Length: 254
Image 1 (cartoon, rainbow, N blue to C red):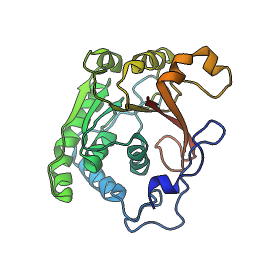
Image 2: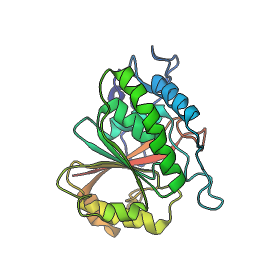
Image 3: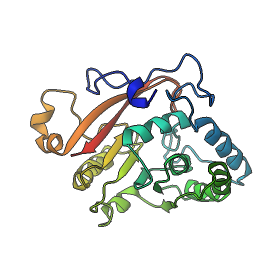
């Protein structure tokens, strides 16, 4: 089955999209993907091997006591995000707060899309670059073709999304793991993303355009005109920071 066929729910605040776990693993050993085969396990094995050969380790607590900020998504969840963001080889994918780059690498491997990550931690950004140098030839050998361009930018994501070329004429596919970012930065992103080209999609964990209450449409009518909003639930064992299921959102510029 496809992801679309396996998902249940309407994608509303009252009935979010869910992807039930499989009772038995697919032929690739994955319990999350509804397809007969997937590349989650083979990618995860290749990533772990590359990380084991890098002479650096990821720093997860880079903002005081906030241990969540540099943790990532498991490959099974990234595969679902590729589906929800509708990423293909013609796209540019941005991971705003890319940590060790694992999401970028999987998106590049599974879709062929050009990938750009921004990471404020100099240490983690350098780790991501070194990991890609080791991982890229392994993935090219597995895939049998060259990998697309992957760029790691060290800096503040606010600076990157303010660049004129960011909100250009071509639609973008964006992930922001903004759950513990300052609220002012989430608000800044919500304003900047209104300028994205039609067809752009943004996945986030702290809702950029709150829409669960009846009053939301009155409070921010422009957001409802610019975006189709989809509420989703990630299944168990999808993220590094929590074993339970949880909410996320996908906003499509219309």
